[in-house]
Length: 340
Image 1 (cartoon, rainbow, N blue to C red):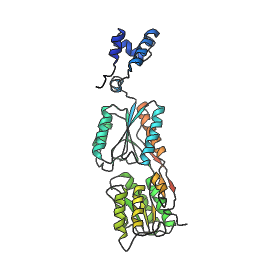
Image 2 (tube, rainbow, N blue to C red):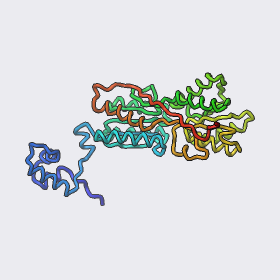
Image 3 (spheres, rainbow, N blue to C red):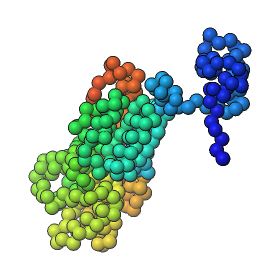
Image 4 (cartoon, helix red, strand yellow):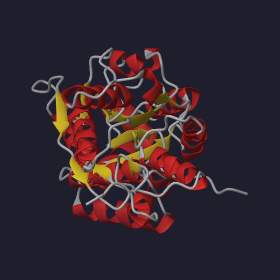
């Protein structure tokens, strides 16, 4: 049988003093005598009293807690972002509740409702791949709760956002592939409504045009998911054509790994027959054979900046304003595309 939690009322009854006196003694209020404060705190420790965070939030309108929602907690990028957010939150004396949408808009809605019910002081969010409408996120804003979007964002919401310079990073990927001799460059992307996919395709197209290479719809491969499996299946179909690409750019490392598996299955040498690049600098990308050329989005900077923007809204709401912070990326050349 679960033991009932000790309350302030229990402490007051045992010490034969008022609830308000106990409350002030626990907060070291100087108006309460030192003897009473010590007695209250000693009994609280003995009985294992813990403040009820929801009750405290109801009374003070602050929970000293923020919520973070990511599409995939096991993803290296998102895990690193969360760690950076926690470091900033720790410095402000805040706790962090983390949840994953698992790429489901319904789970995303549920997570938001839980955070609102627990009176989180602010929320940091990256959209799931199935999120195409934003009423549930607008509800955060309408509730007056500070909100910051990161990585997968939308301009349909009036909220601060932190993003990588996806278009520039994709442009540099294509430039690198062209420099290595590639002429027929395919891009693997996901659902077309996501900001990350749109911006990475934008950079891809700009580089192709600058190098006088045709931008063919045939080379823009849309997968239903940003997964290794979906990418592999798409690339296997692509490589069955007589006019196969000589390079593939996956807009995530998982997609690049799927492309690599398909290429190997077709007997192609990497990078001699086909060069492959990814995006995000995941741990797997470093240890694949061959290792995968990718983009470092500096997730620690993304997380730190997202947390800073959120705490500006929480701590100095009068001075906070909506803005977009863009994090520059780094091209990391590895074996999968290095033809030098």
